[in-house]
Image (tube, rainbow, N blue to C red; front, side, top):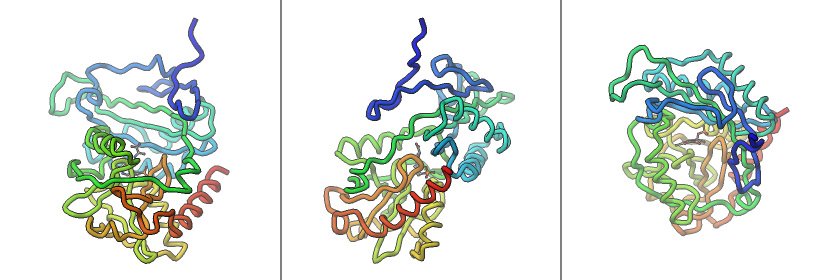
Length: 299
Ligand code: PDD
């Protein structure tokens, strides 16, 4: 007899998830979803993706994510398979099928199945895969004490603005951070901090927030957009300039942001205290505004 437990995604949370996924036009049980072994996403990492937080059954900043998806698709010369309203309906259906509430929605568009060749195939339709995972709340311990990070050389390519599924460099960097006892790696390119391995990054000096500008060296984070506008509305000065690696040890505060981990304060960098070694006041202010916005969006 088929088990009701289809897959368990988060052992820490003790969550057992019974989930459907969307694959190439159909909603099916996760364990019944299949793709071709010739799928270019599988063979070549040829595809793009989005991760969207869902609060109380509603996507947070959906328009921003769909807009970035469009840009990523254009960046890899793929046509968007759906209009925004079609995406919205598809996503909404999956969220409801998987019980609503708080979820992390993952959507992927890859170039499709074709005989392996570096050159793009012609006349092949893209593959679309959407799943939801439990959205693990940021722990109170992390919010009270912050996280540890290390700096690493940014070994990624020159198109970090594309949210590509080929994440091996990011994965290697994050793993190196983990093996060093840290939660995130802050990446250094040509002497300047670009972003984290799976996050955007920020440094605060004398109350002013610095973050790398949107160019090809960072992913234009949706949480970054929200954070910067909330900070500016609150009268905090934000400067979109990359911070030199040599200045990082003098920062009063360091943060990272992402859709699934929100805004996290870094209280130790390379084993040294950041500022006072405690969670900083500018982070506290911005995080409080972010939490309020999340609450409003869930209503
Ligand atoms: N990653 N930079 C990188 C390299 C990232 O992988 C991410 C997020 C971000 C933050 O973007 P956003 O605020 O839009 O989530 C920045 C997601 C969460 C992931 O790969 O799972």
